[in-house]
Length: 124
Image 1 (cartoon, rainbow, N blue to C red):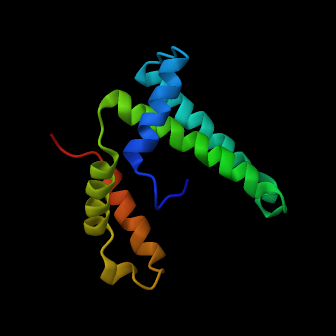
Image 2 (image 1 turned 30 degrees about the vertical axis):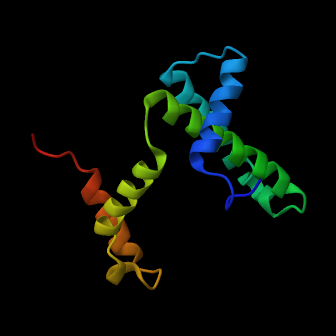
């Protein structure tokens, strides 16, 4: 199996079948917690520069798979079309971080200004 031969939907169906066969009926809160825990296990591999060790790629691959499995499971439970969600988010990010400002990879001050602006509470 490879990315260019398997759809997101096919992966999602495999995750759902795996869960159903084991009668794992988790609620959205538990699924969100699982995604966070697995993300932190991935992050832990980068603590103390462990990611620079020669055999860490296999561990990174496993933890990344755990994160993605959690996301696929969660999206299925909440009836979220992942392709649509990613597309919509990228459209939002294109407006938030315009290419003409960030095309050279720099603009660190502008990035932080924009982030601060978007995190401020909106008046009701």
